[in-house]
Image (cartoon, rainbow, N blue to C red; front, side, top):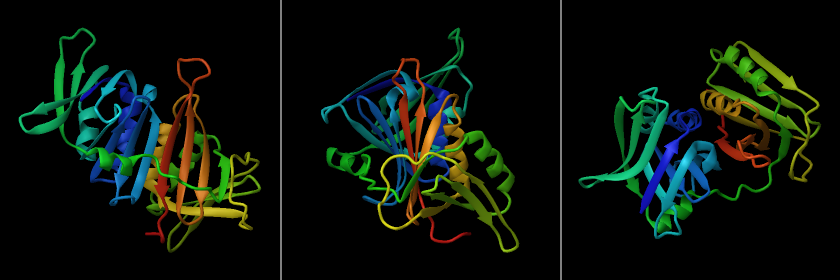
Length: 272
């Protein structure tokens, strides 16, 4: 079993920060071409799922195992986030190592002239071949409504202004190409909307003309931060009262080969 990579710190650390906002443990699923990061509430109960191509997160990458070159491991999300951000070194090399009886993800922070080196180790639990199947991308089904995501910076600006009103925000999309956000408290309700958006992909053919999902504001802000990468475009797929799925397309250095980045936030049943 072997895992070696040179980390794109800007992207990978932001992905991990989304997960660390949930607290607890995170599952990382490495294959030859894709990386999945999952926060689970139990078997087949995924609370947050992020998937992307490995080229988005790593400039160099090697993975091999007896399980079709797939490695799935579990670790503490906050420890993982800290290991990536503890130092501002331009280069971080990541490897799967063993310290005594403990498997670890080792992060080797190095300066450009190699005069400074910092090693960070995060204890991990390797999951069995059978367990890896529980953390692959689920079959999401058909969303209720899907629209092109509006200009991300405009959404970020609005969310930043609303952070003190409530911990939850409602996302709503309509089949007329409108995307709304609203946040409310006992004394005030604030709403903004974006119209004229393209309807994308397949949607539920039922009579429902709009769909909404109440999601955690802090997690949504972190999703927006990664989605705000230069040149990134996106779509939002809302499964009414169930979840919001975000698909972002991120340009790469390879012409005509962008990478796809997927987030899923489960909907809450009531505002805090």
